[in-house]
Amino acid sequence: MNRIMERYKERTPTSQKLYEEAKEYLPVGVGSTFRYFEPYPFFVERAEAGKIVDADGNEYVDLCMNYGAQLAGHAHPEVNKAIDKQKELGTLYTKPHKLSAKLAKELVKRFPVDKVRFTNSGTETTMHAVRLARGFTEKEKIIKVEGSYHGVHDTVLVEKGDDGKTRPKYKGVSRSASSDTLIASFNDLDSFKALFESYKNEIAGVLIEPVLMNRGCVLPEDNFLHKLLDLCHANDALLLLDEVKTGVKLAWGGACEYYDLEPDIVCLAKSIGGGLSIGAFGARDEIMKEIRLKDGVAHAGTYNANPLVVRAALATLRKVLTGDAYDEVFGLNERLIEGYEKIIDKYNLGAYITSVGECGAIYFTSHPIKNDRDFDRYVDDEVKELAKKFFLGMLNEGVIPHPVGWGTEPWTLSVQHTEEDIDKCIQAFDAVAPKLQEA
Ligand SMILES: Cc1ncc(COP(=O)(O)O)c(C=O)c1O
Image (cartoon, rainbow, N blue to C red; front, side, top):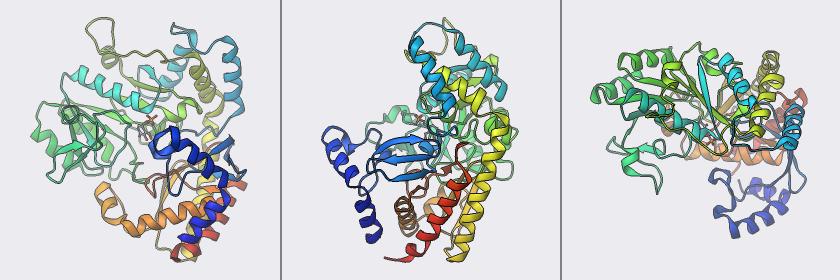
């Protein structure tokens, strides 16, 4: 590890300097805590298509793609054109404009919803979706999945304590707000059934990612999502599908299309904006009617549906993430997986890959991971250390292999990646693999 770390430092002296300066003014020296990693994160100078260039001029093939937020790739010319046009017309109106309904219509075409409202992030989206579910069902409790991530509002920043009860996961999270969140396990329908039995008529809904992407790339098995939807409906509760990472990514119509699923509320953000900060939630009419002028569920925001991000999102959906864009990027992902798997075999790494659409994750263990409990058991300190070496080693070879997190997040390809980019990633892994067993 030491050699990998030393090499990283040799390549990034300007980043180190910038980091030391940033620490003076920003806690942890970063704008979002997840961005930090040891010894310090590299600082970005510019990003274009499938690549990022750091402050020392090192170029990386970017498979992080902003934590899965940019299927369009960096600085897509169509998105840039939309930004250029809108900046001349004003970036914020806080008044209605004709583009909002157009964008809403694009999302209604792609997802099984009648109406949508816009937000500015995934956090806001899941927060509003939860409130909408509570308003519609007039019940308060929400079930979330152990180990899933839905942003940084109190309802979802919780974990299961040793006594099996929910507790705040971080300091500052309100115990009373988080006590209305119950925790079940991915791919384990019985864990949901048990909660519905214990809290009869108290559960407003289940908030769930269709693929558990905060634990690598854990796929739903044995029709789990459909069974969960039926279970929710049998208990007059709603299924809130968090498509912040999967929406318009797993397919043109996201995980809803990919799994042929009609959840009650769909949560979107990330890739719908082509790199700008926008989110949206949608549902059928009877649910969305809860958002009304009087006696309804609150939804408001100065920056909601601002014309800059809406125009960029429209360009993303209409001109970039078109139906034919998907086959190409899925093909690139197959090329990457095939190349990586050959290297896993060549060096006998005992690792495996799971994938979906343009995403995938390497687990440096041979144990199958079906949920958070498996993850905690098998992704132990040794496996995390390998993932960390892989991450830094790949950086040294000019590849950002996945987001920071030592193996807890999948990679994302974009429609602007090329076969050359993919081959560079495979060559990088070939160079890094033999070093993984070194101390
Ligand atoms: C599934 C999921 N939901 C919600 C969020 C929160 O989104 P944001 O970071 O835009 O607040 C994320 C972010 O990674 C996510 O992966």
